[in-house]
Length: 85
Image (tube, rainbow, N blue to C red):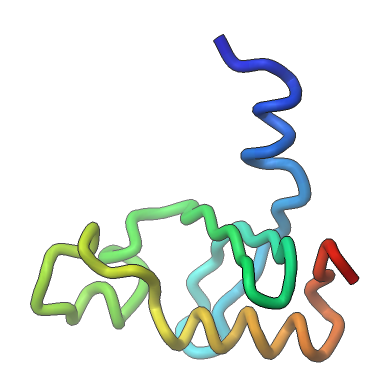
């Protein structure tokens, strides 16, 4: 059974973010400059060219570096809030 606290921890604060490289939309929460939570809203291999072109199954990839750069840029510019300020 999932509690309201667990649900808030897992999905609270997630905001849509469109990758500046390919346009793939994910849900993102920046808990700190170092910690980012990403929830894909589609199969990565279906929407992200980096995942689609990978030589290994997409489950073995940590993340897309272009998406990570896009999220980092948005956080530095202030268009994506960082929870710890």
